[in-house]
Amino acid sequence: MNDQPHSAAPPLISSHEFATVADLIKRMTGIHISSNKRAMVSGRLAKRLKALGISSVDAYCGWLQRPGNAAEQDAFISALTTNMTRFNREDHHFTHLTDHILPGLAAAARSGRRVRLWSAACSTGEEAYDLAFRVLDACPEAARLDIRILATDIDKTALGTARAGVYPAASLSDLPHGFGDRHLERGKGAGNMVRVADAPRDLVTFRCLNLNGDWPFNGAFDVIMCRNVTIYFDEDTQARLWRRLADRIAPGGALYVGHSELLPEAIAIRFTQQERGAFCLPPDAPPKAASITRHDTAVTPAPPHTELTNLTPADAHRPDNNGGLG
Image 1 (cartoon, rainbow, N blue to C red):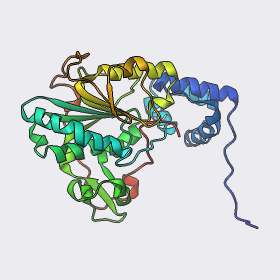
Image 2 (image 1 turned 120 degrees about the horizontal axis):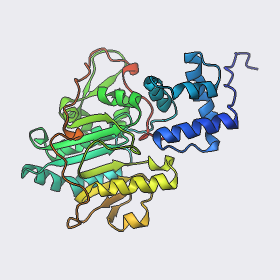
Image 3 (image 1 turned 90 degrees about the vertical axis):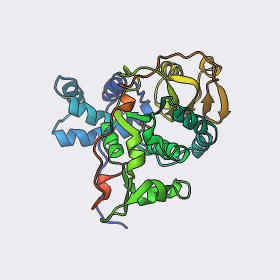
Image 4 (image 1 turned 180 degrees about the horizontal axis):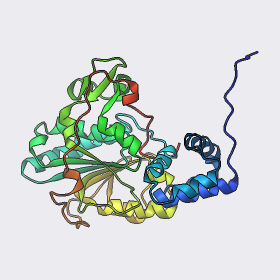
């Protein structure tokens, strides 16, 4: 018999409280939380209420919506989104990108054309850096050309990890052979951490963005990865987001979606599906968006880099998806 004390699970919030929380997170982010997530929501909100000394979910939700509580709104969103990602996730997408998309984009950049890639719902950054690794392998001189990667997520906590670009060395096991040596640096302190090298970091700009809100940039992207995100939205929200993303693909560009996601038929017929989850727009397709200007979010310089020495796991990694609920 085990006489060790057990931590009591937090009390299950009521159906009314759950409905209040579900309505609030949907209005803030577009995320739909089904009723079978009530225990998860109870546990995660219990931590916020304890930290703030608030006694009820209704009081917390009311206080959360008052002016001046933007920081706690960010914490609320972070608490209810589980970031599940890893390097080289759904590797067939990166194989397709490397074999069929990047050679043409590298040639276009060398001829002077702008090239833009977007990791939409980038979570803790692995997907965005994966893109940068492949870009540099296809075009080592990318830093001297007009190639940029925009990486966005609604979770500011996850974005902090992404900007730091520091991960446990064990997380590199899914990368193809040689990627770690070419694109990451090992730290000198405890924790066995690695940091993304300067060359791939310099290609990526991280920004906070709600995919269901306004997009503060114009124009088209040559590559958009938006994977395993729309499964957390209702059907109308999914359809609207897929349409917006499809309209941002440049002629000849590619949209990559997650293994459990489907494009609506009216959108899918505009593309050729070349690989599972890889949808390519014909080069002669009429463009839907104007060209991105040099002032676009995607070309803003990246923030200063995190020092590599004496990093610990606390500096680095959260579990991963591209911004969905667990």
